Length: 206
Image 1 (cartoon, rainbow, N blue to C red):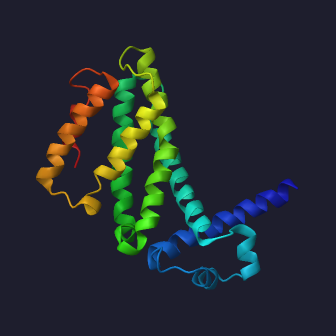
Image 2 (image 1 turned 180 degrees about the horizontal axis):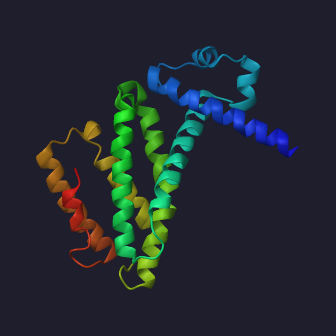
C-alpha cells in the first residue's frame, strides 16, 4: 500500500510540474481540460485519477510552487540569532526569491493568468505565514516585538508585500514605490511595536 501511495504522489508531482508549464505557456483562461490532457499525453481517465477539475489543477500547481518556495527559504533562516535579525533575513530572502521567480515566470502577469496569479499569492501567504509567525513569536518572547496575533500579523505583512507591491498589477513607478516602502516600514514598526530603526533595511531593497 505504501509503495502504491508513493507511486501515486510521484506521478502526481510529475504532472504538477507539467501543469505549471502549461498554465504559464497558455494562460489559465486559455487552458482547457482537453488541452491539458493533450499536452500531458495521458488519457482522460488517467487525468481524472489525479485531478477532478481545471481549478483543482491550478490549486495543486500553485500549492506545489508555494511549498518549493518554503523549502528554499526556510534553511536560510538561522536559529541562533535574535528575532529582529531573523525577520530581516527572512524578508530579504523572500524578496530575492520572488524577484528571481518573477523573471522566470513572466507570463504570470498576463491578463489570461489573473486568476492563477491570485491563487499563487494566496498560496504563498498561507505557506509562508507560519514561518514569519514563528519569528514574530520569538521576538515577542525576547521583548523585541509586541503583538497578541503573530500569525494574523504575519499574514497581513505577506499579503501587503505580495499584493500591494506588485508593480505590474498596480502600475507603481519608482517614486511611488519609494514612498510606499517608507510607509511599509512605518506600518511594520507600529504593528510589531519594534524599535524605530528595525526595518530601515527596507529602503535598500531594489
